[in-house]
Length: 159
Image (cartoon, rainbow, N blue to C red; front, side, top):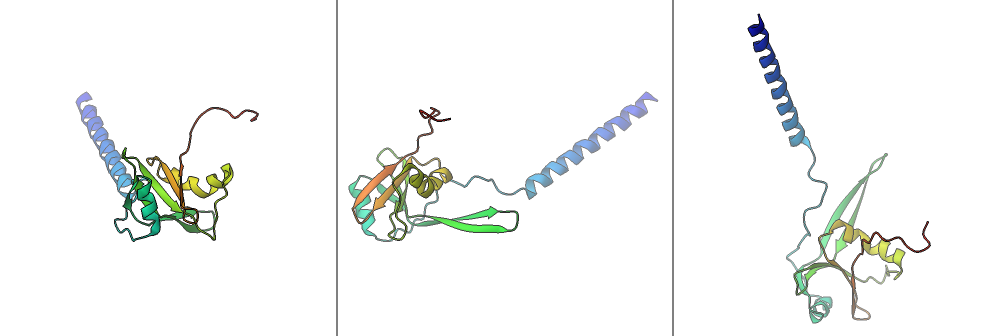
């Protein structure tokens, strides 16, 4: 009688294992792609622009042209779509990658902590593997290298 229960128990365990494997395989096949963006997008088409000469004069090498990053935000009511544009991707002598944003007359950057946070931080958060961002002001022919410090130190006077 015990042998019959042993066989029945083995069949029951086998069925449970098969169901778990099928459930896990189905979950893996129907799950969305990874929530992280794949590495820094590189557009090999690099149109000629005066900013390229300025970038190269500062010791950087342009390795990618303009890239559009599509974004979708799911809200309670409906999805909302937006996009970010990266003007160039460059590398320096040490091999570090930098994203490049060109200044826009219609959208000047406020050079305060909150202005840089609002205007440029999304790019650095999307691609944390980049060493930073280069902001190029073509009117002044200047390049500003912006990096983000993730220090855990508290600000003096903060609550």
